Length: 358
Image 1: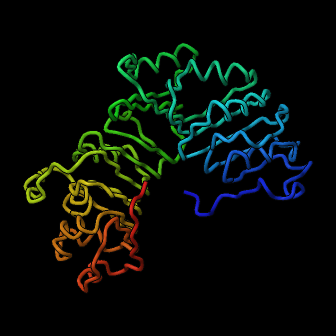
Image 2: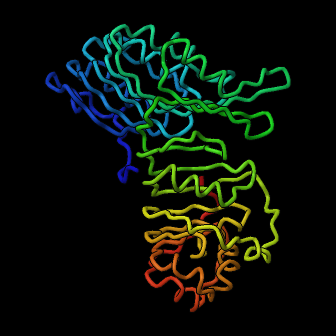
Image 3: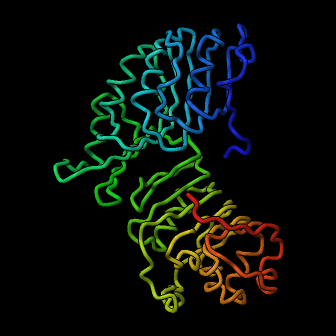
């Protein structure tokens, strides 16, 4: 994860980003307009452009140069935030790259009427890049559907890639809420470090590069799910559990629910854990040292009241070990600062409160 803020260069003097000698640029910018500004003729000799964009808005008020980018041979675009401007703004940008040889794309799409599949990619991107030989991608698309929608499954999407000769791909379709569905399509091997909106349905492959993962609970995650996560994401550093469910578990039965024959789940690299969900079951699962081992956990985001209950008012030895290295606590509810609370986190240096967190 980038530790520095994105650049906003759209309104800077034109001579700041102007060069006839630049052939490669790697940059993190605030918006797609910043990216388009750089491609407005300021860097005419650019052959490799690697850009991460914070937000891609559907803003058509700014007029940019639309000349073809004949010298560009390698282009990488990454945007982690959801966008609804893919068709109107990103596709036209790709159409300017007629001589592109290598394309990398990570993008998350919202409010579409159809999923992005192999047929779409061939028609809208690939057939317009005759020299392209490497296409590395991850694309998720969220649609809102009604009763007339023909429900698609993984194999339906996979077949569209087979039809265009793309065999090293993986596809997952998930109907995760009433009238909402998400489709993940990506090239193999998976080379990106970010993955979001994964449910209990994800491919049985190893995501060797993923360090940030967000899972969405459509059914309650159990022990076997977290075992799968630990094995599938061996370098995981940032883990977020999101949920649309209410807690249905009796908290007093947590310890009875634990099966002693289960092995302890190992997350050797995890440094940040976000469990701002209604269900305190997950806090028990991750903080109890007979269930999970978190030797590097430094940041914890959760409900103070849930934490207080799970740790038995900060006196429970079984949860003390996984809290030993926590330096930052972020709560979604009010907390009281008691002496035993501070003693429970010996290296704690920051406690903060926020209403919501993504």
